Image 1 (cartoon, protein in one colour):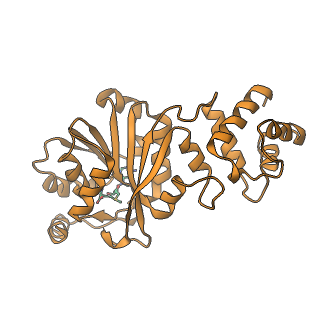
Image 2: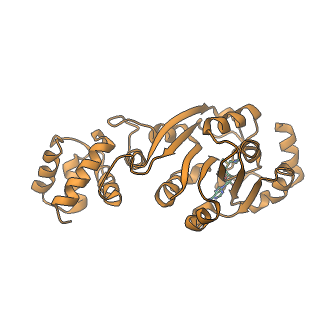
Image 3: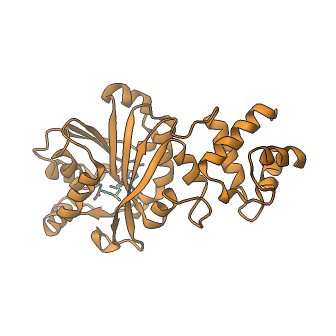
Length: 279
Ligand code: SAM
């Protein structure tokens, strides 16, 4: 398959573009395993972000009802016309997914799952866009850099745990479902990858005001060297006493750093702050 694809790419005059994060997968077993780990079946509509030469698109199309694949690079058009010939349930939309009107797309397609080998340079904005704006995405099974995968699935009080981990945990559970060495891509990137499955569960961690809770999480990680108290004081411009009493009310030690708080603790702190303090 690798050689077949290489000849289609060269016959179509395609050149890989680093600026679009183009690292393609050709291995049939790997493609099939990504789709099976996503759990999609013949009743599912799948949105793929960045279909490249269409190898994953084809593997998805074989298992689901419909695939809508977004691709930013229009020079892949002649390649995709050949690789997706006969895949009648797959359609390609040449558009930057970051600019897609998600509300409009969701009105058209109903509920769906995302399956994608994401362009690494926009991994976080793409995941954030869907988790923040989507009303009908059921899950995201995405290939990301291994380091990012570790971050998305980290436990509190570990070096990998960050604001993105806690923000995602509010509305989705995260699990690494497959490790993928760099040797599986063409061209070969400098890092290994992993497939993460995010299962969307709105209100997974109950919180009064999710947007405010995200602000509290980002504040807590504003400076990792500072204590939570200092970060709250600096970011929200509240007095030290107010920050301390909120932390105390939530059973958080005054010397704690943000990264020691579980997502549930962030929700509790955010609820307390939003009720008891005018900010
Ligand atoms: N799915 C293919 C595969 O697995 O072989 C290609 C994956 S490659 C890592 C990422 C693809 O996303 C590239 O084809 C790139 O052109 C495309 N891409 C990059 N930024 C994009 C964006 N903002 N919207 C849609 N596609 C994008």
